[in-house]
Image (tube, rainbow, N blue to C red):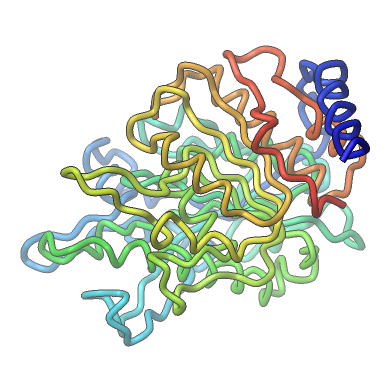
Length: 391
């Protein structure tokens, strides 16, 4: 007993002495390129409102749909996956159908003498430009043909889309990662305002299909390190990250996950909430469906977020069985301020380097870093840190 108390005391002393503010990593050194997302000329002057509907997906009362795949200039050069939905009641009105899902892939490439940036024709193109897109028929050239790169999947929130993540993806790819950004377009599946609960099961199903398409492809499959694949998501995308990593949606055993996911970043993840006086949990009662996840997870949340509240997120995190880290973005609502996105990106990159690149220095910083320099207020909650299964 005395020895245990001494160990606990030493652990607490280490954090009080060793815990420190971390310096963010500089921008990565790789050149980056991406698959093609060019919009056809006849659509480039589309209103922002109509473009938004195509990006999030839209379904009219007459049965017609809108989706970004309808607008692509070179659909055969874009990353479009036809996802077959199982004939199962879990998937509601879209069971036994096929959905086309558009993603773009950003990757480290050989230096480009004359890059041709492309601004996606939408007011939110200020979230970054495609640095250099592959031309029709052109194959990707990875920075080193003999090297394999970790894969990172980016999953957006509800009523959002992948265009928000252009510069986010570029920033990760510059550090030597292949990054796939999915635009789910799930609003086209809601069918006359019927229950949207099926989208909770669709998300990990679609994500798995996109991952498998990359692994099976001749363009990227040979260059992906299959032992180091992560998913990072915000809000409903954070829910998607946890579900794809192995969380049982609504406690349902048939919920789809991907066995090759080896780490996950869940930012403001939806894990449930109180609706009309009733507690609803995303992963079964008390989120017990997260207990099967034994891979490294870092969770970031806003201290004043009432959309994905911390009083649901923090108990859910305790269900995780693998290495676990929790960071509070102080005083942030669900709509993070710019500096807090900066903090998220820095914690995310540190975590990815630690667990996808086996960077021992990054792992040591992750274990002891109290906050990130710059950005807004943030702090790691060490009381949630589970290191029992850490490398």
